[in-house]
Length: 377
Image (tube, rainbow, N blue to C red; front, side):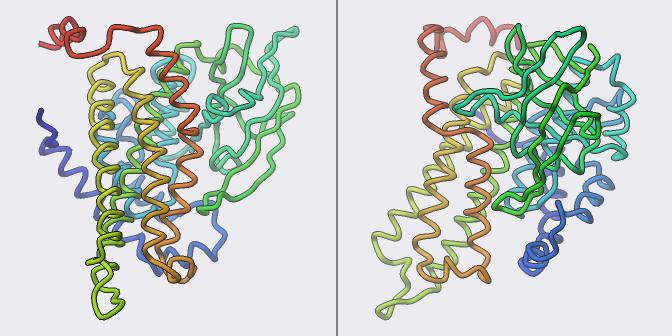
């Protein structure tokens, strides 16, 4: 199998690396911790200026019309730099509107592609143990009731794409957070991004604000790929910095990187990264090729949460006391990993969903993919 990127994808990756590396210095990260800004506004403007905010939005609506693999290149760089901008939330929300509500939401999509409107989304209700808490009711009209918790940049966004439970099952609703009946309770995640609980009390919607049921599955799989790509970047940089540290830090007259226990911990981290990378590559490929990706999405989701936990804690552990010093940068990677794990949902819940899928789909493996492979030829 050829996992190499195309020339265009390498160029995108290099540009994204440069953008996030230049802006997200350790000094600037400390400034952001103290500034209490909702996200990195100057960095977001740079993303708009370079077109990184609209890679996944089709050209017909003002975007670049690129695929999930291209977006992966940017999100991985964002994760490595810990760039606090709503890249995946904004453009996946816009891309979903293109797919399922292009006729009624064209103006909003074009504004999002131009950087004139900011979109966000939340799918956390799908992975929450208590289920979806937003309810879409038909009572003389479409009414939205309940709460969506910790929605990224909800108070700053122009529109939110949220999961609501309806008579036909989960669906996506497009909500103006300034609508009558909407209350926002702002907060900040442990890694520094502004969020808000979105409480709805009989918020009146029109039919154009409700997407078909198929949109939930479409968006969830792409959101899994996006969050996993950010996590891959976070974990790679976390491990790189840790290896550099253990090769310099000396104890008992030699570098702690020569201790067998430390080497084994770092090897475990490397294996977890490669497992996530391989699964993520496959998921991105299948999404771009228009192939079914249910099991691949669940596998990537599981490996992402496991890598976040394992790498986050092992790298923190080998740093010793300096790892808990907030003036030292390594703690930020652990905070990011914890947050991304919550976005992906717990590994146990993901395994349960994967097990249910496998129980009902007993045709899994290369020999069952022959028909779809022929269709690609």
